[in-house]
Each structure stands twice: as C-alpha cells, then as structure tokens.
Amino acid sequence: MRIVGFAGALIVLFAIFMPWFHSTMLGHESVSFYKMAEATYSNLDDFLKTFQYLAEHDESGKTISFLGMYFLGMLFITLGALLGLTGGKGGHVLGLIGMGLFTAAWYMVFRDRLFDILYTGYYLAWIGFLIGAIGGGGGKR
Image (cartoon, rainbow, N blue to C red; front, side, top):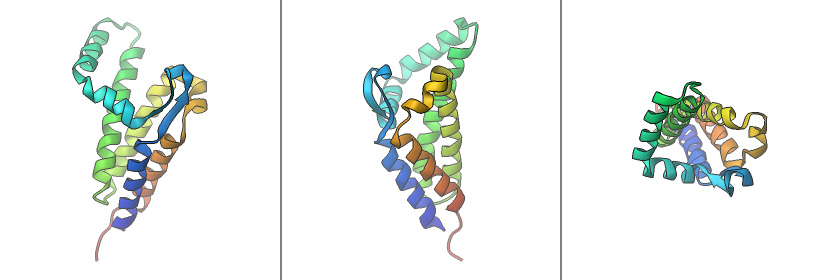
C-alpha cells in the first residue's frame, strides 16, 4: 500500500530533525541529520576540494573512504526520504543503502563506541526506511 510507504517517509522526515548523535566528543551535545546535511551541502565546494586533496595525498585510503561513504550516505538518505513520499519502495531502498553507507563511514571513525553515541533520530530513520521498504509500493488495483 502506498500509505505505508508514505508513513515510513514521514517517520524518516521527522527523524531527520531529531538528534542522531549524542556525545560531547563531537563538540556538541547532540547533532541532527539536518545539521550535518546543512553543514555538508552549504560548504559543498570545500567538501569537494578536501575530497580531491585527500584522493591525491591519502596513502591509506581510510579518510577518502570515510568521506566518500559519508557523502553518498547523506545524499542517498536525503533522496530516499524525498522519493519515499511518493509511496513506492525505491526511495526507501535507496534510503536503506544510504543508512548502510552512513553507518559504515561513522564506524570507521568511532568503531566500538559508535553504538554508544547513536541517538533516537538515527534509529527512527532506520525504522522509517524499513517500514517503507517492506510495506511500501503497490497501489490501487
């Protein structure tokens, strides 16, 4: 049913404004996906310059891997949430891929501490995308 996919997308959109990380290690008490996306997308030129510089100079490849997964994760989560409003499964599946990339990127940084600092919005986004991917799609028959 399309209503299930739409409901999943609404959960994700609500989660975007809730805290995803809760830790003073990040320099803030809590950080929402919206704040991270705003910082990334508003400074896209700087982000791309950093990415290009690291691609040329990072011998280990870890930093470039983090930035690539982080950026693609952010992009797929954003697009997945917006496309999920149409009620189909495609946006939600894209969102799940984005969540996987986003999680993998941050796992590279925090390792075993990652699940100690993840907060409500992060888990709600997973739930919303899963609801939409499992129950979304279909339509009037």
